[in-house]
Length: 164
DNA sequence: GCCAACGTTGGC
DNA sequence: GCCAACGTTGGC
Image 1: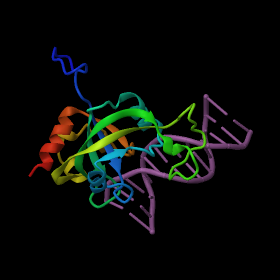
Image 2: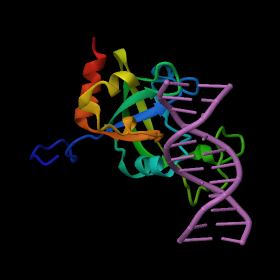
Image 3: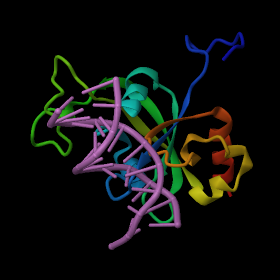
């Protein structure tokens, strides 16, 4: 941002970290599917990012949470931006919300496609040990947000740490 | 499995 | 609008 470069209408991509419990949806699973709807987010702050801020071509760190060790496993790319999460509708869904309707959807999702595996997972501990990452949202005490903004510097630092 | 931290709900 | 109760997240 802030330079005079032209990139097709947008000054730059933004960077994000998506959390997933691998027992629910792993990075392997994304690579298999190649394209995934990032549905089921039921937190308003994360919803706002999905609805308002996450754009096509934005880059994503895919983080496995609630496993030993928790770690960033790979990257993904946003291929469709915020649209209503239809999995909130209908009782056969894994995460229904009867308050959300077609006319007034509460929840939103994006589509992503698989990027690259890191050559080696970057663990939560490794991130804590890197002073360059000290301001990461993920590392803030008690921060449970499942969709988090990441700076370009943080994104690149983690990719560097993950390439052996 | 424990439990601290957090978000959400709902009574008042 | 307060806040207690509850459910969930997620590291350890």
